[in-house]
Every structure is written in structure tokens, then in C-alpha cells.
Amino acid sequence: MPPDTSTPNPLRDIQHKYSALQLYLISGLCAVILGIIGYLWLREAKTYQSYANPSYGFALKYPSDWAVTENKDNTAVIFNSPRKNALDAFSENVNVVIQGVDPRLSLEVYSDRAVKQLQAVFKAKIEIIDQEPFTLAGFPAAKFTYIARDPIYDLKITHVWALKNGKAYQITYVATLADYDLYIKSVNALFRSFKLL
Image (cartoon, rainbow, N blue to C red; front, top):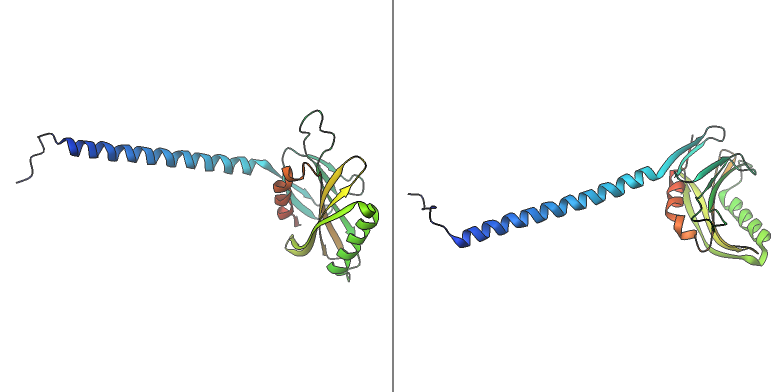
């Protein structure tokens, strides 16, 4: 004979309500977490825009709120950050330069020459922060970061370069020392997205 369930059991009722409350709280917490993850994913996905330059044979993704200027001052393209406010006088930027080089030139020799040239330009006003191997568009590359003292600004600059088929592919990020870290995540994403067409 089945147990008599017609008589109220306060302990069983409390356990049932407590279990239902736990289930609602866990479901609600999961919904909030999934909503936050979805929002962050969508925000990140909308942050970058594709750019392709068939003339120079490369493509990349850049922050969609940055301005694009092509073929200026011996660059293939320049990406300028938006101004933070009316007093923001310096626009952080990334530029891409492609140069013809001797196809026999090694990355090591090119890197040594590039660093020496930068040191000659800035003389004692350069402080090397980091110099390391890198990969650009799937090819061995070099990454060089330094602080350059200028009469108006102290700049933090990162160059990435790779050699392929008699061309040097150079991407340079230039920022004020104070604002360098504001954009480095976006710039690193740009570096990683660079590919040859």
C-alpha cells in the first residue's frame, strides 16, 4: 500500500521549496553569465573592420572607430585612433610600409640595420624596451619596442617586420607614452590579423 500523502508534512514542503529556490537561483545566475559572455563576444566581434590592399598584397583587421588614410608619406596605409577629447593633440596610430629589399637579405641583417637606423635618428633619446622574435602572416618576424624622447612628446613605439619575396613588411604602432597601453590589445589583434593576399 502506498504511503499516505494526504497529510501535510512541513519538513517535506520546506525541502521542496528550498530545492525549487536553488534551481531558480542557479538558472538565473547561468542566464546572467551567458548574457555577459554573449555581450562581450558581440562587442569584440563588432570592434574590428576588415581592410584589404590588393595593390600592396595584404589584408588585416583594425579597430572600426579608427580613421583610415591610404598612400600618404610613403605608407601603404595609416590607421589613426579617435581623439579622446578636445584636448587630445596626438592621435595614436598604426602604419603599414612595404619596401623592396634584396631577396637574399636575412631577417637578422635587416633587423640589425633597422635598429641601428632608429638609434641614429633618435641618438641618445631612445630607450630600448624589448626586442624579440615574432610571427607576422605566418612568417618569421622581429618585434622591436622602444621609447623615443621628442621635444613635444615622449613616444612609445613598436615595430614589427618580416621579409618575404624581396619585400619588407613593416607595421609600426606609435603612441604617447601615457596612452600606449590604451590601444595595445587592439594593436596586437591587428598584428595577428595581418596576412598576405
